[in-house]
Length: 120
Length: 120
DNA sequence: TCAATATATCAACATCTATTGAAATATGGA
DNA sequence: TCCATATTTCAATAGATGTTGATATATTGA
Image (cartoon, rainbow over all chains, first blue to last red; front, side):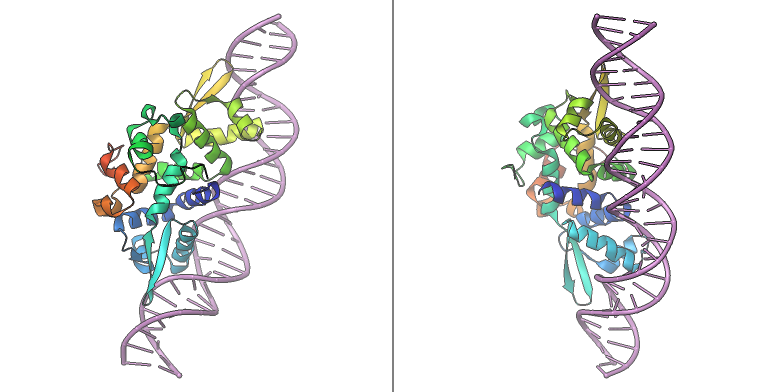
């Protein structure tokens, strides 16, 4: 995860429909959901609107897609999400995250480093 | 953390200067940095530009400020950052985050719940 | 091959956002 | 009180973004 990727990801997440899509897919799990089902969950958004937002999310690396028959199945890109969080919180409190919030400390210390701990 | 707050936070983080400011303050720790020092770290950005971005970040709840003499000291709002992450990852994989990335699982399971686990 | 389903692409329009430069406000010291 | 420092506010401008409706592409089954 570099700065440009992080900016694209945050921009993708800053739009209501797209944030809802990502959260839906995060809960849906690795098997994902077809574009049509996602659109229905978004107050029946038009196909062009869904396609626009899904392509923004995919371009930002936050979701991945695969074709299954006539449907395109979208699913959350969990490593990218974790990488984004790691990017944001890197070197929290000068490497002493115990002074920060417990969850932040847990993310950057107790848990496995997700990526990019070699100052990319 | 509700949806509107999360959208504001992600929008704030989707701008290059603001993302750099937040990362600088995340590493700086709770004591924070004066606006002028932050501006110098941002390629000497103009004071009005810095003020614009800092006020966006503060309005989004990602940083807090306090006055010290002539300076305004800004620091990262660690609980808000952790809350944002928790909001994004809530109910990851239908509550079975072990299927997701280890860091994600750690965030939503091993670590203390940050906020909002009662479906606000 | 034809029709139906599922999704993506495109152009036009309206809206939102960041930057600039000038002016205003607040604080501290001489 | 006067001046210098530190930061914010404001109006104008340029550029980026989301929605719509129409059209195009891909897949499947009859």
